[in-house]
Image (cartoon, rainbow, N blue to C red; front, side, top):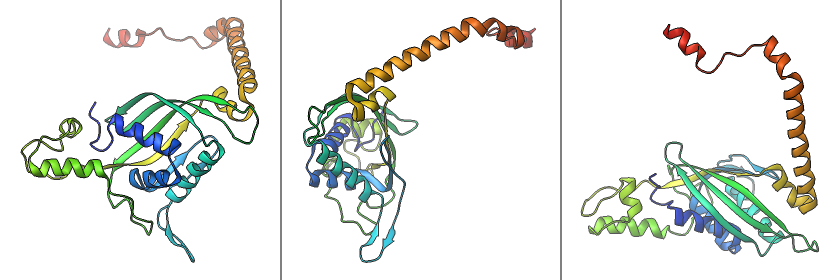
Length: 249
């Protein structure tokens, strides 16, 4: 598993923490540094489509990162102190996807005793950066220090980072070009139903959802026992491997 040079496991965890626990400036800088122009965002409560270079009279050209920044800002306003733990982080090199298993405690400050300990899976879609992250009329992001350091190391002939070596973008003592920088084109936050309900109904709502899930399981069992033989008689199913054996014969 070869991570992109600017998206090591350690760095992506820092990105998530800056988005969820950082100040408003940190949130803004992180989004405009790591998210692509026109990035999309999906969450059970809200959705941001891909918007690029939308011209607004009196404002100028904006893109969907403005909305993503607003979502994270409101998220932090609702719960100023967010407890968060990244339990696992995996990169699918072929599909260019990062999967993060996250546990967080979200507490809305103006609702007494509100506490929502939830688990989710965040999926980050990556793509090579094709333009300046600060393009499209938006304020330019702060310089990406880690990438600059790695590029400088390559140019000086010093030993590059392990991530740069495994990505095959740089090697010690070589005059190779700058490593490919990846950006996030889409973020998806995926919740199980019982986890999602903890936001609005807290523990009682999650317990009710869990009970309904168990009830649905019992209904599946009853249906399989009562109708299973009838269905097999009407629509007989070939055994696994039977079709292959007939073709070979």
